[in-house]
Every structure is written in C-alpha cells, then in structure tokens.
Image (cartoon, rainbow, N blue to C red; front, side):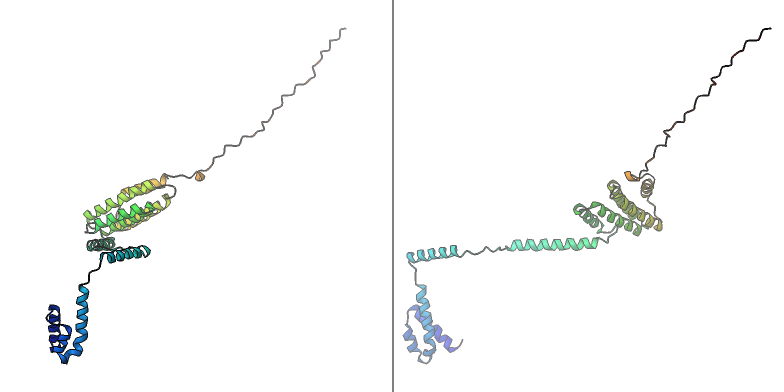
Length: 257
C-alpha cells in the first residue's frame, strides 16, 4: 500500500467516526490535499445518501408510476429452464443419439451377435409405422435370406435365421392379393434361386411356390375363356311325302260271244 492510500484510509476512518471533518483532514495533509479533496467529497456524499430514508408518500407515488409503466410496456415472457430440466433434456438428447447410432450399427448384425435382438426390435418399429407393410415385409424377407446364407455353416444360427424367414413368409402369404400377389411371387422366386445356389432348401417356400404356380389363388374374370354353345341349325329339312299315282286301273268287262 502506498503512502497516499494510507493517508486516504486514515482520512476516511476519521470522517466516518466523526473524529475530524473533511477540511481538518485536508489541513492535516496539505501535500496530499489536491488529490484527497475530490475523493473525500465523494465519500461524504455517499455517506449522506445512505442515511436518506424516503417518505411513505414518495414510496406510494413511485410504486404507482412503476405499475403504470409495467402495464403500458408489457414484456414478453421468456422461457427459462431450471438446471434439472437442462440436465433432463441433455440426457434425452444423449439417449436419442445413442439409440439412432445403435440402430444403425445393428442393421449389419447376424443371428447370434449381440445387436441382433436390437435389429429385430427396430424392424418391428419400422413395420408398425410404415404406410405399406407389404413392402417392408419384402425387404425383411430379403434380409432373412441374406442372413440365412451368411450363417449357413452354423446349424444353430441357421435355425434362428430360418425361423425369422418363415415368420416373414407366413405374413407374405396372408398379404397376397390381387395387387401384391405378383411381386410377392417374384421376390420369393428370387429367394428360391439364391438358396439353390447356396445349397439350401426351404420346403415351405418350395411348396408355396409350387401351389401358387399350379393353382393360382387369384383368377381374373377377364382371363377365363368364354365357351360358346355349339351352333344348332335353325333350318330342318322337310322330306316330301311319297308320290301316290292318282290313276286307278279300270277293269274292262270281258266280251261275251
């Protein structure tokens, strides 16, 4: 602390305690008077202001003016978030990001791998919100075939992939109608060819395609040929009756001698 700071502190303490006045402090330190005067005057004014107490009438007028200003100048409410709410929102964002990234990684999982159950769950959600479940089932059937081929060397994992494919196949059978039958059959034929190349056979798929080819479930009325009745001639030939001669032989009496 410099000498001036000590002098200023002594003067402030003396004035605050009433031991001396401002002029007395300045007279006691004439060499510092020029610098001390404005600082001490400001300190005295502040001290006087602290002792000021507004009257009840002044308070009432001020409060009335304040309320009037608030009514004529309304402020829009700003949403404020508490620290707990901010933490909750942050955790929700982290969970959503983890779910999205985990779902993306799970799409390449195979039966028997940790993320495969997550993959199946995300597919159920996808199918539930899809506007066209048939298209989703066709995509899921393609996935099950790819998984079945990929895990073919492992009988346990292959059995799980086969169960998943048969489940989708059962849904496709129930969804087969006039609009969907053709594309479902074409997709299943491509599955049959792919399985045949991999040396895998699914009897349920073969039976369904065989029955669909021999006995189509849907027959269009336009595709049924119209059988015309045989033509029956309207003209019946008339057989004329046999001609009977109108001449009757006349017997001439014999001549008598």
